[in-house]
Length: 288
Image (cartoon, rainbow, N blue to C red; front, side):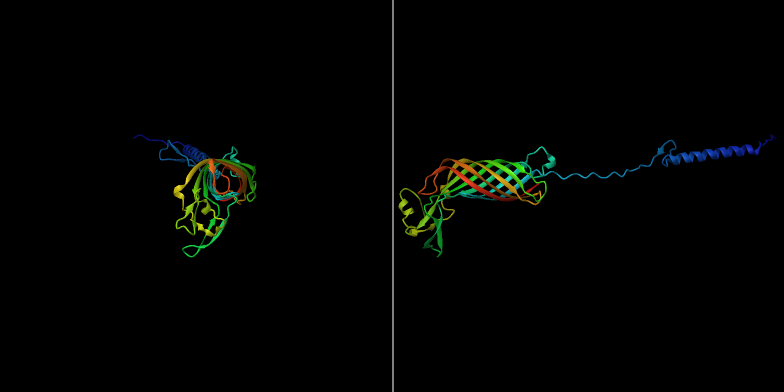
């Protein structure tokens, strides 16, 4: 039988101590590397994902570049309603919201009066028992449809909301005139009549007592004559809106209208193809 001899026990104790020391160093090294964890596959390392606390970016609001407004137009020779649609025109996008320069398109409906015409209430009762009004000497109604474009230039801006912005506005329109004959009722006529060379003495009596009143708005539409023309307007616009998304404007200015043929509104007055006007406009609207 072979006999085995044992070495000195202290030799084995030294080896065990070296192994424990190396194990402790390895553990400390792993902890120093952000607590790296070994996967089941010891050849790979799994590193925990660290999510940085990055603040979310907030998108700035879109600039206000569009405007729509509508309102009433008071004219020295009539009245009208209008609708405007505009787009901002500026290279300074930081100030585009501050009541900018604007290119706009306009649609307008107006009725023109002659300075000499005025309304009279007839003394003759109507068939329903009431009375009708009429305009003595008036022979035509004149309406216009205006479609065009314009540009408003900023003169004084709005550094603060609630202050007033001032613009210089120029507009060029194509105008379509609508000339409609004016009918009246006479006491000795069953049907209404319009002015002609044959009936001018009856249409314009020496006293208005024989006139029973006007025939109404709808009479004469089937006899309407179309007269093309154009208009040019210049004005100053004041915007009093308290916030940049609203429109509250007052506009004052003047213009000239030209038509391709003479327009006669009153029997005893000259016809004209050029009209000079003063006007004001009051409007409201929104921007976006």
